[in-house]
Structure formats: structure tokens, C-alpha cells
Image 1 (cartoon, rainbow, N blue to C red):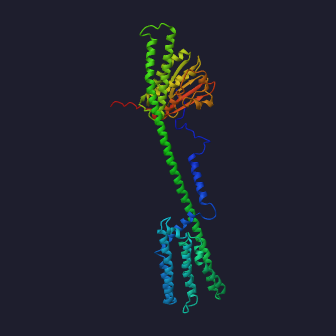
Image 2 (image 1 turned 60 degrees about the vertical axis):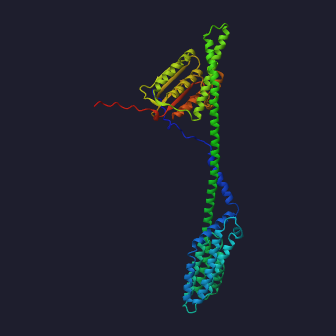
Length: 504
């Protein structure tokens, strides 16, 4: 007989309506808080300004080798147009201003954070002053003259050199706010005045275009600056998030260690208690059995014999409870070792039927077994498989009323695995009580009212043992319509039968 059940992997449906992962929510909260701190107010926070100044210092240091080159080349051109003395004077002053700016950047970079030198240096004001000095040196070219040059020849030279100087400043000082306007703002004002006063339309146009180049390149520098700010903020968010994750990881490690210590303490406690309880309990069971069987002589009072039998049955119940608690604790602690071998699930099921048959017949319950023929062996722990089926059968016998029916089925699943199913026509379990009966020491209302004495550990042990076999346990029940329990073992646990080889 085949039960049309999908495989274990196929039966796992995605859960719906789940709450958000706490770790994800915490991460989002950290990012939002970081962004709030980083972007609060219209003015950039001090750490942003410091980061921008640090980038500006890095840009100056990277360009330090190349900055003197255009000054020397322009000075050489000036010497050809205006003579050596004006060219040498301009080149010397401009080189000095440029080198002072680079040296200041180098000094600032060498200062450790928090040092007196660091406290003495402004964040950006002195850099702006340095760029102003360099810009004035470049702007001085506008006031030089070349009487021997042809018409507009020197003006074109001035236009090209100053446009290059403005663009170079915009690229180098993009992270320093207003650097282009501070360095070449005076030049732009002079050029605008000259464009209105100059009689030559070509010269006036060049002056106007050169004046317009100052705000244009200032806008380009501002775009680059905003891009740098966004990059710094993202990096800061990432660093803060990494820090939060590291702290969360430390807390998680501590919590896991505490949980492991608690689990170890619980296991040690249960092992100690089992030893301390089993030793006197076995003595009680042995002595009560000797007295009940009247081995050392007859019992004079019949009531005493009944009391001894009650002592013996209560001791057996207590011993079973201790064994179940220990089994469950070993499984939960991950110390339950499976002794795996090839197991005939049909044979184990038949033996379990024989074990509970006497109890079932005492209550007038009819037991039936339906087994798929020629089932291959299952790779598992025979003791654990026997305990799974015995626990399920014992539960069915407990809750099935007199004259009821219990059916044990063993067969194939739709995914190529094997299953063991126990179905009864007992009172069933209300849907809201199913999670309770599947929890440790949990008992439903019917168990409390009508069933025989139990521990509430049978189904949790079954779940744990089935899970150790990579399987799935299902409980299907409706109140008043009976209960079906199914232990499903995956296809990977079924041993393939090799075909016989023909004799050669």
C-alpha cells in the first residue's frame, strides 16, 4: 500500500506572514541612526569637514611633483614675450606660494590627531588663504604687458594660461569649499570690468568668457565636493554598521556560550539525578517484586499484597519517566548517537504490534497492520525506529476508547522514501492543542481528563528521533474524528536493492 505523500523537501512550504528578522530590523535601525547623525543640520558636521580637508591634503600631496611644472613652463613663455626679469620675478613668487601651500599640507598631514599642532591649525581657513595667494600670483599675469607682441597675441596667451590655472585649481581643491571663488574671485571681478571698458570686441569677449569660467569651474568643483561627501557618508555608515555587527557578534557569542553552559549544566544535572534516582528505584522494584511473588514466604494480609503491587507499578512508571527524560535530554544536547544499520521497517512494525497487542485486547481495541510488500531496508537506528513506532502505538492505545480501531501502515512515500503511519478513531485533538501536545511535558485536554497516566514526552521524543533520521513527523487530527501520526523517512535513507548478476 502506498501513501501519496511528497518527499520531505517537497513538503516544506514557505511560511507566510512571518515577522521581520530582528537582525535585519536592527541593521536598518543602525543605518537610519547613522544617516541621521551624519546629515543632521545644513552645515556639515566637524568629522565631515575634517575628512574633506584630509582628502584635499592627499590631493595636494599627490600633485606636489607636478604643480611646479606649469609654473616653470608659463615662466619660460613669459620670458619670450615680456623679457627675463618679469618672467623670473613672477615664476619665483608663484613657485614660492605653491611650495608653501604644499609644505603646509605636508605639515598638516604629519601632525597626529589630537596633537597641539593639530589644534593650532584651522580646518580649512589656512588652505583657502594659501589658494588665494597662489590665485593672486596667477591673476597677476593679467596685468603684464607685451608691447612688442602682435595684436591679441599676448591676450590669447593670458586667456589660455588663466583658463588652465582655474581648471587645475578646481580639480586639486574640489573638496575645499569656495576654493576656486576665493582664489580667482578677484580676477573675475577685474575681467568683468575690463570686458565693459575694452574697445576691442575680441578682447572683451575673451575677458567675459574668462570671467565666466570662474563660476563654471567653481560649480564643477562643488559637484565633485558633494560626490566626495556622499562617499564619506557611505563609508562612515558602513564603518558604523560593521562596528554594530561586531558588537552584535560578540553579544551573540556570549549568549551562545551561556546557552551551551546552561545546556551542559542541565545535562549534568539530569545525568546525576538519573543515577541518584535509578539506584534506589531499582532496589524498590526488586524488593517489591520479591515480596509480591512471596519468594521469601507468604504475605499474611491480602491488602499488603495489593499495596506491594501498587508500589511496583508506580516504580515502573517512575523508571519509564526517568528514561524518557534522559532520552529527550540527550537528543536536545546533541549527544544521542545513532547506531545505524540496515533495518527492515516492516519487521520492526510487526514486533511493535505484538508488544502492544495484549494491552489493546484488554481494552477491546482491534489492531491491524497494512504493510507494503517487498520494501527495501532502511538505513537507521533500529532501537530508535522501534521507540518511534512503540511510542505512537502506545499513545493510540491510550486514547482510543473500548471497541475502537487502530491501523498501522508501512509503505512508500511519493518521493521514494518510506513512512510509518498509525491511525485511530479516538476522540481526536483540537487544532489549538496540537502545538501543546508536541511540546515537552505538554498534554491536551483529553489526556488530562480521560487518558491513562502519561509523561507528555512521547511525541517530543518521536519528533526528535525522526529528525535525527533526516525525516519529518506529522500529526493530523480533528476533534471527534480520530488522529493520524506519520513518521516520514527520506529517499536518501532507503537502501537500493542491487540486481542479481548472471553467472558467467
